[in-house]
Image 1 (cartoon, rainbow, N blue to C red):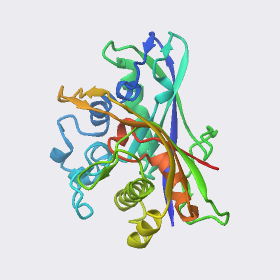
Image 2: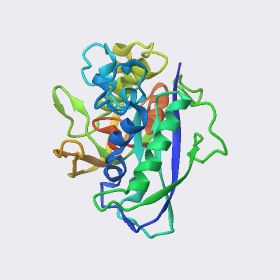
Image 3: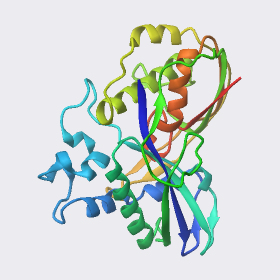
Length: 301
């Protein structure tokens, strides 16, 4: 049982001076991407995925309005988008004209043609200008990353992550919550990432992404794994809450984008959970992952 994705890196050169604000670098990049993607991927008179006469084959519908494609897994009204951004390293950075920079995008649709659409959309978006000041850049290249996040010299088959437990036992891990995380639980939001809640949200996200875009939902015993996850102890938790917001370029509405950032240490029989924690490093976990939220990093202790 595996999870497949294309981890991509977009390499650009600034043509104007670019300033990336704190906590909003992803919003600056994501900005008008949907509108630009629709212009490239859809017919000129198509205003939304639901209006597209061939929406089952429409790349824009698959990426930005996937719920328009048809029935979804039970209880899921809004499909997760099949990609996430990784651009936190750009926060508070000033990129002068002529300097290079990059950001990453993890794509969960294992189709080669989708990469071309994203490359074309970002090339046009960068040329028109990023952010409210419309600062221009040039897309130089797109590369695929390996499992260590190192660029490969080619774009080939998707990265395949094995979800089966490894042979080496794991009894302690540290999880860094690198970007703001919000975890749903019992109709609300968790105040701390106890392991049972963290694993449940990771498991559900991986299973849903596989069901919608990959090989199908996870073939595991959800109940028994949840019971074993509840036995994992959170022995240290150092979190701070952050609050930010983004403004939709399409609707003009402002949305809260907060959550907790920090570190938690867990102890117990973690061996079977490690593949899921390591996969969540690529998928993210929690709410608003498409905007770069929910990025975690896992270290064995």
